[in-house]
Length: 564
Image 1 (cartoon, rainbow, N blue to C red):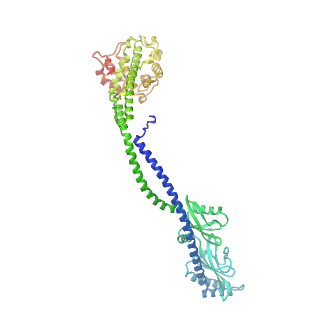
Image 2: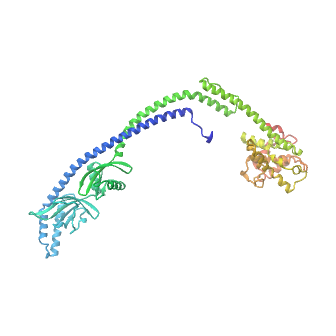
Image 3: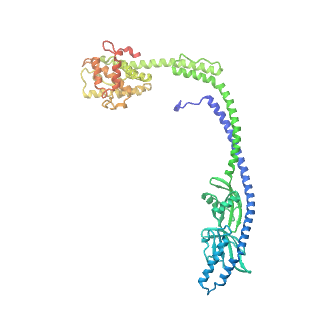
């Protein structure tokens, strides 16, 4: 199975398909319901804004009328009129500046008394030239004395307009200031169109609000980003701006509607369609969820019952096959379950296949092992002094591997790899391989080529690939002074370490033409002496442990252990 991933069980797949089908249907229903609710909410929001516009227009008209009446009542203050009239009479070209200043102070004091009666950002009193005489209120500082008051779009004696003063936009209601039918000035009631005004307007309209003057949003209850987006949308609209519409602000759809125009100022109400639809959508989804949950449970129960009818016999067969694979015992083949004709035929076909595969594997393994042993025997036959060397090394290596508690698969690789460890010597000339005296450095260099030659020989035979590391690296040493690569420590596979120790022991305990065999004890002492440098210490220890069980009383390796 590629990637090591296990496919899902048939039961799971059946349930998954059923669930996916139900889920797709429910999702489709949810989408339709959400869209329907959204359309209904959109219509409801538009209707509410339209109704709010009418209510707001009526309330705003009444509020402005009341403000006008308040201003008119304030303009009738006798003391204020008297102060203004006296100032006008005595402020001619030859008037004493000190006297003039005194009367202006009197007017300011009278105006502050008047301003205390009403809640307004500023009350401004002007002369007949619309020059400020005095101002009172929270923002009176923006209306300094002698400043001209200009109201955009103002016509006639009574004004309901907009003025921009030092960056602050005011809505202004004014009345003429007369004395005995003679115009002596005007009285202005100014309300700042700021965030506080927008909040009051929003409470009145029951929606978010924005006030636009000269194409700019002067104040609103929107976020700064939304205010800029709304301003841009109005700027892109035809002259006069749309009376109503839909716009996207902060990634939400908003319905907006013009509430009222005051000269160059336009008041808008805005409501988020998405926010308004969430509650309705949530309620609809909650009800649908109950229905969907019931439908899903019913569908899953039915599909589970159907899937169990199909998958239970297959599961039993699968369990039997897993048990047989784990035990690697082809004798315990699964028996037909009798649940269905198709599954029983599958079982019989599998049993026949396993029987034939097992027989083929036995034949292949026998041929494989025989070929390796034949190669080892052919190599050993070249030198009568080393006859049986490969098989003895194999016996010793297997014993060491078992002592080190290696897995059965690793021991089998060691068994056959040890038989082949000197296969590269096939290419060594007889004059070097069979030389009865010690080798020269040049001749020893030829001998040192046999691990690499053996690896190249085995590379051409795919099923011998697991044994190549043993053949190529069995002369490497833990201290890095081995050959052919000079590897160190853990860079060398444990299998190569083991064969190295077994090879050295058998070489020392076997007679050569130029020397006699060492006693097993002396050979083992030699290995211990170089343990950790020339030889793997644990492998040497394991050899010392297993030697009594694999050598005879004469010190020879018992080859029957090859098949133990």
